[in-house]
Length: 426
Image 1 (tube, rainbow, N blue to C red):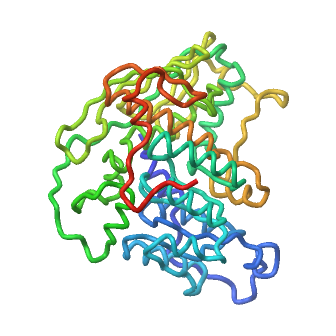
Image 2: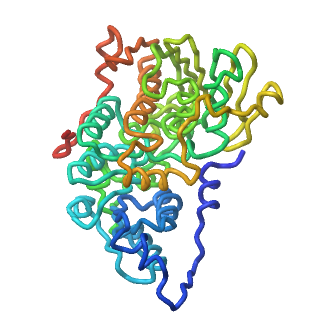
């Protein structure tokens, strides 16, 4: 199985040196002249922030990256070097505090590539500052996702939940085949996602001079610094900052599941699951997990750890794939070769990816292919699974009211407290 992150890294690698002609390039004079470009500030310049997001933005002729922000000095300095090398100047500014970027009138949009516990606060503050936002997924809680989606709608901001899946042919193809009845009536969805790490023993240590640890923590509980805590991907398995591999990989595979099921802007009516947790470990999200979701249309979705795959089973066959970005498979060649007609359901996509789609929508003021509401519903699906596993019981869900039915304890888990002075403000 090809790693999603290796797939991204190799497909987006940029040359070490770039040579431009000595004549004045057309981009300086035409529609892509600097005065016509959409300006971008980068918040979060770790591995995914530069390997995927920055590399893609630098290739957009109608975008101009002006600033790099990260609480790690080494990371923001690395981003600056990449940006300055690409534009052949030294104009990129660096910032430790993201609020400096939000205060700049010369920046139109922000790309947020931080740990999950920062996503909603930064997005809301950016929208209040008049910026359009592309932000990594997912939100940290159900409650904050609803606030974000409502704010985007009220402020008429453009917001892209950043994921590449909807631009990838295999996932777009699977969703269209299911939506157009090529497997008959959809009955069952089976999803596999990677398992979490078994153990992490990490002792407190002095905070590196390179890091503003208090700002890294932000709204999360105050906790002594440990070296692994802030490492890329490690924080994903810590409950204070994320929801484990379920919300990491689930944000990809489960989006296609919701898309194919035509439930991308609603959700299931029940969830039940069980997971294995490392008692006493810093990694306190589920390692191994099994979940069952039931939708109002009768579709049942089974999610379990142990790989990456998708399978849609219907009354007249099945379609799916057996690994990240692997080609479609089906119960018959007829299904695979099927042509979606012009009068059938044509699902919105952008083959050039989420960054291109976002910039196009900044101009048109239309919703991107994964807007805030859809991203919120996707995150809610995963948060429901985590809550069910933590409580150890089946939960009934009202997707309209967005609350668990008759379960105060579960409903209390739709949000998490925030460390002062940070708070959500719509």
